[in-house]
Image 1 (tube, rainbow, N blue to C red):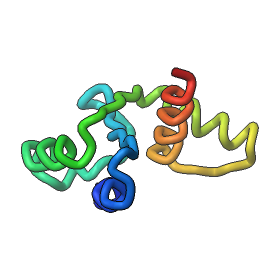
Image 2: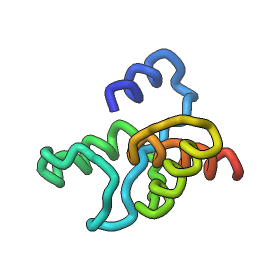
Image 3: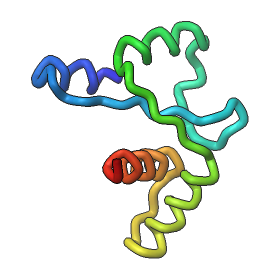
Length: 90
């Protein structure tokens, strides 16, 4: 979130997208220690574009990265890779 602000300072045309779980019951790590209204307001200001991801897709990408690329990453990192691939496909 801080990186988005800094990148936009350096390049106002950059496109930053927030990655969020698609449901309240998920296995993707998030800053869940913040009160929800404060977190949502901050995310909206920092990155108005949102991409929702299912936990199952994040887990599947983690397995794929491990088996195909030899990369052992956590679920939140795998979610980021999954979202990047889907956004790049469009």
